[in-house]
Each structure stands twice: as structure tokens, then as C-alpha cells.
Length: 117
Length: 112
Image 1 (tube, rainbow over the protein chains, first blue to last red):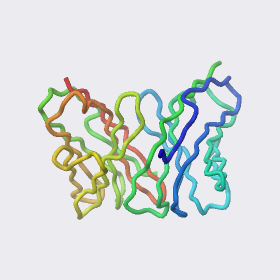
Image 2 (cartoon, rainbow over the protein chains, first blue to last red):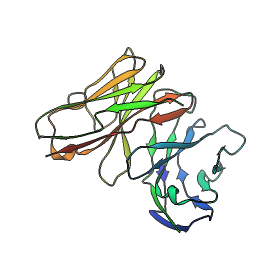
Image 3 (cartoon, each protein chain N blue to C red):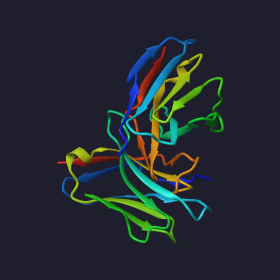
Image 4 (spheres, rainbow over the protein chains, first blue to last red):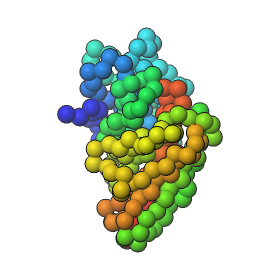
């Protein structure tokens, strides 16, 4: 079974609108971390936001916020006031041990976001 | 946040040869990771490199094909050995800083 599911292969959004990218996850570990990365066509992986499973508040980083619904195992990324430069692939990822440790990240298949003027 | 560099940024190699990719972090980190991203795909973890111990490989990846070194807390190398066209991918290293994980810019490898 997939640990990270991103159900939107592609999205077209009008500039300045808010965007929600979906991510659901599956883990039996009570301690885990959730990540979102942006990958433009250059190929680099840009860290956007992190949410620990024990964090009480939803994470925010500038225009990015993570809508964390633990009971639903959902970690959607919200981008406010989208810009043309937001066009890229977006990956949701999970580590099952948020305090650090030997585990790397498991990635979803990604969502290709295109912002239209 | 940790700043990570990789060399080379890209390369075109002949099948049967080997390529060593270098990863440098601007601060000391305990854990470093190597990932592969095949064309049009997501990232897959190859191995975890902990300084002072052997790398831990994920299922489907073996040390003979992807030997890894981790000589100190700021540096790691990944070698792609006896390359075939199926090894054409982006190879990315990453490092943990607290609970977060940051990536290098990647090495785009084409095997002909």
C-alpha cells in the first residue's frame, strides 16, 4: 500500500487564486513528520514546509500553510495568492520518525501545478 | 537552513563505466541520504549514510552497485557503478537539520 498519496496529477490555477494540493498518508507510527517540496524544471528540490505529528498548530511558512488533519491522515498544502513562479512539481513526503533517526523520506507521486496569467 | 552542493551537476557517461557524485554540506550533520529520481518519477531513497558506519541500503539497492562513502560530518559520495542506460536519473543528496531535511541541487546523469 502506498504510504503517501497525491491524487492530483496536474492542476491549472489562475494567478492570485489560492491553491490546495492534496496529500494523504498512511502510517502506524504515532511519531512522524510530513514535508512538502517544490521541484521546478531545473530539478532542485526546494523545502517548503514541515509538520510534526505532535505539533498542535498547523505549520506556516510565508505564503505556504499545511492543513494538517491527523484523524483523516491528511496533510494538504495551501498556497495563498498564487504567482506565476509557483508553477512546478510539488511533492508530499513523510518520515516515520520526526525526531530524527535513520529513516529517509517516502515521497508521493507529485502534483504538477501550472499557474495561468 | 543547511546549504548543500553537489558535483557534478550533470554528466553523460558510457555504459559500463562508473561515476562518483560528491555532496558537500555547509555545516556538520549526522545523517545524509541519497535519492534517485528516474525520468518523470518521484524520488526513491537509495541509502542512508551515517558518519562512522556503513551505509544502510533500501530494498532494491546494493552496495556493489551504489557504494557510498561518508568520511566526515560534512561530506559524502555516491558511486554509480557499471552503468547502464537504466541508471539515467537525477541523483540527489540530502541532509537532516533538526527534524527538517534539505536537498542538494541534484546530479543529472545520462548513460549512453
